[in-house]
Image (cartoon, rainbow, N blue to C red; front, side):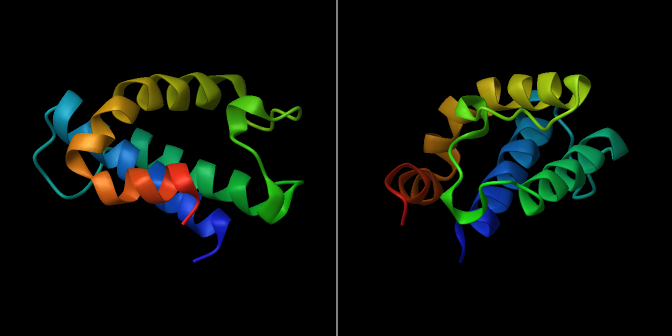
Length: 99
């Protein structure tokens, strides 16, 4: 799996965790706002100027997210990030240590 594909997977998992645990959504289908955010982040990652050599988006010199989406993803990652170790430890370790 490429770095871009892995980042898409991690973002999707974080958004799903946020919806299931923080928003208490019981269904498999995500609300349209969060599905839009998953699609948006995937498009941004596909068009990243740095490609496979990209750094974490928060450390990137080029902020390609629109302000609303940037704030939404920041809020979700702040909540989901620390909890990912409990719900998906393998994914966290792969993400931290780069496979």
